[in-house]
Image (cartoon, rainbow, N blue to C red; front, side, top):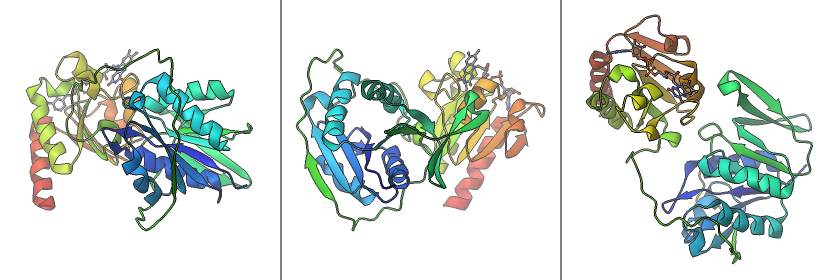
Length: 323
Ligand code: FAD
């Protein structure tokens, strides 16, 4: 059944986040040949419409307003609802990001619809669209179908591959001047705490350090390896609690959930709460002094050794191979 699918593109600091393109690919599957409409909300987003079209949007609707410059729940809810009302789609796709996690339940409540969150894959089985999502902190997966009139899903970043970019694609672009009022929250300023470089939640390669790095300086070899591989540095809560790094790097049940192509865990024991945030990574490499460490149970490749010996060796080898 062909459907009209509305995708929310996610913009950060003037650029589209990769999850927007993944959401377009998900929407293409869900649409079953119907129309994929993208909504872009912000203060200046019209320059991004062609990129959304090149990744699969048939049409793009922009809502530009000074009040949408930074994300607020009220502002984005109002703007998105106005796009929804004008389009009346049969399905909605958003990223399961900090923004999507905040916004999607509110939209679902407003529309009195269901919501399948944190979807990692979508497949057509017979006449049904089947959505797979992890449960119990990634220890199991469930498959769900939608019986509602509206199919509303959020997708986990880095799991659904974007369509190949085609800059020759064309599509309609229009704008809505939304009425945004009675905001209960106004963001005065955004102060970035850490991480210049690659965004942890979208990184293809993550080098993560645990209590085994022993100090803030102990993260330096990990940063060097991350630089060589074009990756980001992450951490266990053990390392954050010990004040070796900022909590914005924490991966796990109470930190970020990541699914990079390559996850290198250095001096991390592999507590269940840490595994909850990274066990769905495509390839896991563990470096640990203790051959009995639990992290080896989820690792594809294990190196028993001192991370301060092993990590610099890896950096040197990758430098040789990649230069
Ligand atoms: P440790 O368990 O102390 O492990 C350090 C490892 O480093 C050891 O295996 C050791 O053999 C190895 N090592 C030491 N020196 C070296 C060396 N030189 N070279 C190589 N290896 C070395 N944890 C998270 O990570 N993320 C979460 O989101 C999270 N949420 C939690 C939520 C709750 C409610 C609770 C109760 C706990 C949570 N935790 C979380 C904490 C979790 O239980 C662990 O305590 C934590 O993950 C341990 O961090 P670690 O592996 O770095 O430290």
